[in-house]
Length: 337
Image (cartoon, rainbow, N blue to C red):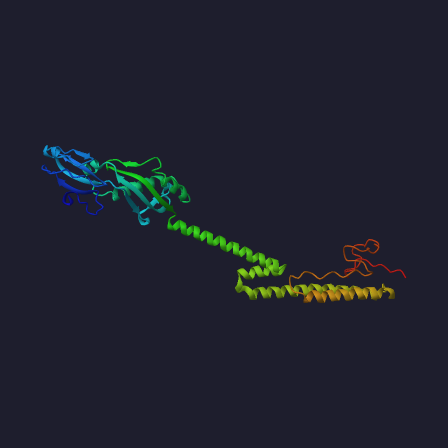
């Protein structure tokens, strides 16, 4: 029976159509995966589980016979045809989907003249996916995908007026190119910020004081090295001038006290040692780099500490304001012999 029931390889749902032969020697059986649909003389389509018997064929009631494919089909919709709007149509999801389906009403296929089912299934699944995707924002693609894949969870979906039923939907939904690029840029920026934080932590651990600020500035403004060096030089000059003024003031005080006879031989050694320590501190501070901190204060004459522990010298009378006459000396006190 290859001339009557032979099925050529094709995506067409109606594999063959032919007039009903009234004279049949024997009624052939239907091959697996096809259904026989007979169209009557008054235009009605009837699906039969078998071919007509000789008596039915001789009755003249049936005019044509159509063999319809009822095997399971699979339709793949590629990503370039899947564009799903998000909530308020602000962005679009991208994705791909695979749909499993079969003909469950062969008579409707013949009556409606449906030749192939891929385009019908693709249009239906895209409409269903768009309806679902509009309920989600662009960052909820996983939720949208999960709901789409549950379309057939309650059983096959019958596509009205087509004779086709969908029994499986498997979709993969992802972000569009613009949103994906935005997230990639955000991740890259976050990684750069974290790397910069680690670098600055290492710098802060190795360098303290003003050098830390200078290093931070030069990291972000490497072309301003000359200006920074000039600034450091001026800062060093200011420190040296301040220390020199301090030493000069101490020397003038010593000379004034000596001229007025306020010093005795027993006091000279202690005051000399204090002045020398002040001079050493001045030279040391002038040679130290910027940001290394001030030099330690020398001990007070007489063995007293500048601050902290140690016995303080006995307090003398309270100084009188403006007693020095503008020389920088607040008050004079004659030392006891």
